[in-house]
Length: 116
Image 1 (spheres, rainbow, N blue to C red):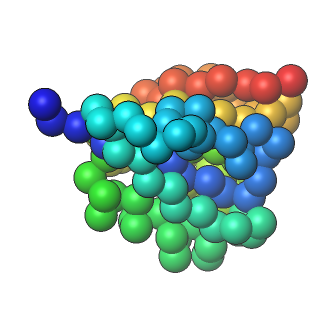
Image 2 (image 1 turned 45 degrees about the vertical axis):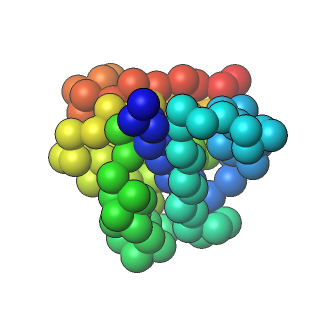
């Protein structure tokens, strides 16, 4: 069986982000998936996004989860722009300020979950 490759790209830190990849395989005993995480650390600027985001594509993910507080900020906006061009199914996980760009996220062809 081919393993599903799940990529997680984190820009800054949203409260639920530290446990996201653990939800898929907390005990590391699943044989049907492989999960990789790339992060900008606490930084959310455009330069940090551009310096790290391509690393997640070296993993060749089947699906991506993108977490960031305030996905309307310049760095997370740049990440969404890049992710939307890659043609990998992507789900954005953000907080309340992300509601401001909900329509833009949809137009970019990305899924989303807004945590209030």
